Image (cartoon, rainbow, N blue to C red; front, side, top):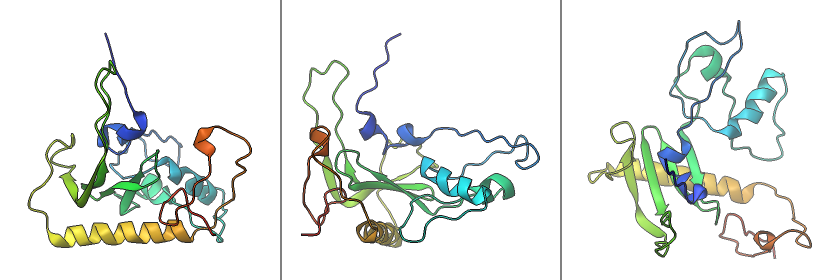
Amino acid sequence: MYVCVRSFAVLLSWEAGTRVPMIAHWPGHIRPGSRSAALASHLDMLPTFLALAGASLPTNKSFDGADLSPVLFDGKPNHAEALFHPSEFTGVLSAVRFHQYKFFWTTYGVDDCNQTSPVPPSIDHSVPLVFDISADPTESTPLTNVDPRLYARAEELRAAKLADIYSTPRTNANFAEGTRADWPCCDPQHVVCRCTD
């Protein structure tokens, strides 16, 4: 059997790259056989483990994860309203999962398995593509009649997340070491290339 997996970072914004089952087992705390369709991320592990240990997150910076305890122990259907998908290459927030909807501001081309064709370019969407994941989990057909309030809410969430990113303290990297991926850049509007000068 031949399997081709290409451009893993690009796939992460699509459901096929993010829909991964998680198994949690803690006798006496998590009800056996319970199931949840809660939207979660590996970024939720730190806040969850800290909460279980009776500790709290530092307050001098923002963290993307949230405590999963209400989902794991109380059966809450969800703990996060939205989950953002940044591009690994640029750090731009290219997509957001919001309830059963997925909004794409940027979609990316992927080269073929034999690498015989050029990689299609990424496409920025001034009006994001919207998929109803509950009805179309393969994200094959964007919705055409989207309530403008839904677009507005997605834009509000994105603006709030970007404001949070830009206002969160960060470290200054030492670019004397590392590879080309570590080279400095300076663009105050870019998620991973912000600068203070």
